[in-house]
Image (cartoon, rainbow, N blue to C red; front, top):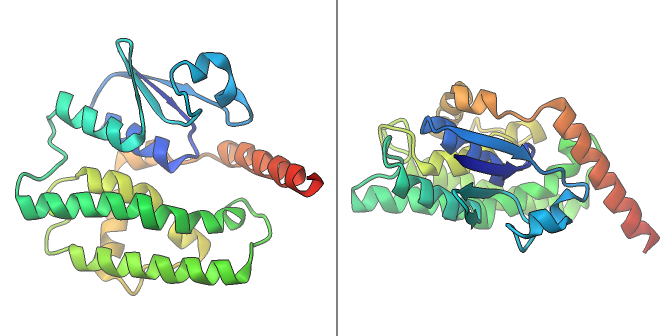
Length: 221
C-alpha cells in the first residue's frame, strides 16, 4: 500500500495527491499538521528535512515531490504522464522545472492575500508580478493546438504547474492575456482530481493560524 504524508494546503503535496488519483492508485492519505507535527521524531525518521510530501511504498521512503512523480511514472506507467517525443518531453520538463524554480517562489509573495492578511512589501509584490508574467508568457508559447503541454493527454507538467497556476486568479493575476493557458486552466479545474484535492476553508484557517504565529514570533525576536 502506498502512503502519502501530506499537508492539504501545500502545492508540493497536492501535485502528488493529484497524480495518485489520476493514475487510479490505491493509497492511504496521512495529514501532517504544519504546526509542529513535521518536527516530531517519527516524521523525521521518514523525512529528515521535515518537508512534505513523503511517499512510502512498502518501507521505501521517497522525499521531494518531483522525485515522487518520477517514481510513480516509472512504477505505474499506465496511464502515461510523460510524452515520448523528445521535443514534447522537453516541454513537459521545462514546465515542471520553471514552475518549481520560478513560478512557485514568486507566488508565495501573495500568501498573505490568500489568507486574508495584509499584503506584503509593494516592491516585492511588483517584482513577483513581473516574474509571474514572464512565466505565463512562456507557458502560453509552449501550448499548441493540443489541450495539454506537448500532449493530447494530461502529463506531469499539468500536475506540477496546475497546482500553482490555479491560485493566480484568486490573488488578482488574470489569465485573460493568455487565452491558451486560460483554457488549459479551465480544463484542469474541471477535472475530478483537482476538485477532490481543493483546499478547504478549514485547511486555509489552519495555515493562517500557523502564519500568524510565525509572524508574531518574528516580531518578538
